[in-house]
Image 1 (cartoon, rainbow, N blue to C red):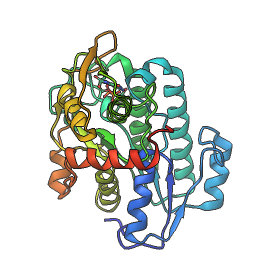
Image 2 (cartoon, helix red, strand yellow):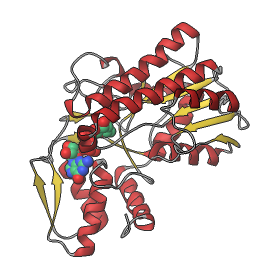
Image 3 (cartoon, rainbow, N blue to C red):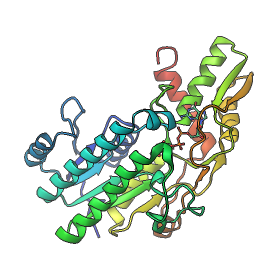
Image 4 (cartoon, rainbow, N blue to C red):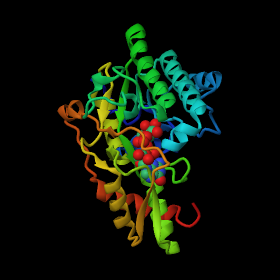
Length: 317
Ligand code: GFB
């Protein structure tokens, strides 16, 4: 059992601390009283550069690493920039995981994604469905990189006796998300679209696809709580799913966001845009059996995220 929960003086490196996930992990660590956080922006440390990552680890010698740095994006960004999605993620993971091994990091937590599972996996998706069928084509390069990250952790554990764990989050949302319409995931995209339409009095909002795909959404503060919990309590070689265990159709999500924003116009579906995978619900039996469950329900989380958007980005985003 790790002493992470008690070691408030430990040197904790959060890779990707400005992103949706990394910033939530930093908030959670600070709230628990961790005093020695190691943080670098991508301008200060390019994680795709092996030599730079190796010398950073040699100098800083972190005890614990949360690997939340990644090239991420919504369905359109994944299809538009497949080379960057596979290259950046492979490099970031390989460099950080190898340096963590070389510098004898006590424990590392790698963040994967629910898109690692086969497109037509039975629902809900159990951890053991990994590599049992073809992937969803719109994000295959990203998924292949994330699968490589899991395999890196497992191979290093087996050969070198490291303690590198992998966590598979479902679709995430919350403060510090990317609200750029071309590259965003569905929740920030729809928050922005409905908010702009309300401000401008537009008669309708366009939602991509058919509205029928189902997705599961987890607030990033719940994910961050799970990351700290697993850093303290999970030591298995197998990845572990983190989600709510509940999903809903995109059409229902759109109706909820419309309501939260207070927009009164219509919703129009653009069927020229891809639906992506039909369903992506995680089986969360494993993490539930360890005693962890999420606390923020979707409506509350959407209200919180919309309030954050209004405070930080509305108008100038
Ligand atoms: O969130 P999203 O981009 O990612 O799309 P995926 C989810 C669903 O919402 C798709 C629909 O069916 C979209 O067609 N959608 C409707 C929209 N309106 C919009 C919109 O305005 N913007 C966006 N982005 N979607 C990603 C993967 O897949 O999920 C990543 O590409 C990653 O690799 C991430 O795994 C969690 O759930 O389809």
